[in-house]
Image 1 (cartoon, one colour):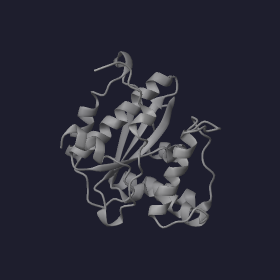
Image 2: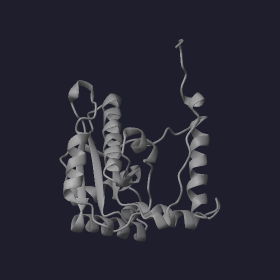
Image 3: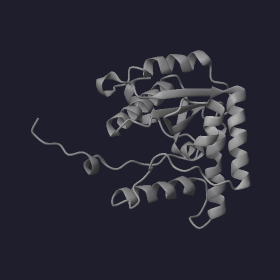
Amino acid sequence: MDVYEAVTSRRAVRAFTDRPVPRETLERALSAAAWAPSGSNIQPWYAYVLTGAPLAELKKRAGERLASGDPWDAPQYEMYPPELKSPYRERRFAFGEQRYGALGIARGELEARQRAAAANWDCFGAPAALFCYIDKDMRSPQWADVGMYLQTVMLLLRAEGLHSCPQMSWAKYHKTVAEVLSPPDGLILFCGMSIGFEDVTASDGRTGRAPLEETVTFVGGP
């Protein structure tokens, strides 16, 4: 698989089979991902990979919290601006329409949408998950480094025939994740990432992208 195919075939998959992901495959992808760019090579990411019993325990604890109506943990960072302006607001709205429309869930069906969202904390059935932390003292450029690292991980997973789904939703249960992982003090959970083989019988479609002219401006001649 060349890099163009990896980029264009990568998407947030929300349905996985229970087929195990070989440890050596994950190690190979994550070893290569360490070469992702970072300012002054400080490599501000901390990744944990869960499979087997530890992942099952995390899913169980998250499911229990969800079932009990336990409120989300106090946020460690702001996921979106309080007032999302145009065109970002429209893009987010279109994503929701496409995502739930593919599942046959109308906009007003709040309970059905909540059930679909709850699958986040089961990792959509994936047998492996990565949890990415960043030191609380890092600044915006280092958060960008973490994003480049995660994108590199996802593209390498595609090269291995795997799919993934990055999930900021896990940050809402960062205390539960910490109970299982026991990360060092001072780290912020940025996101989780479900990893596995796609369940092609349950695909929920793919959201589109803005046209090139909406996001890129070319300046200069040939």
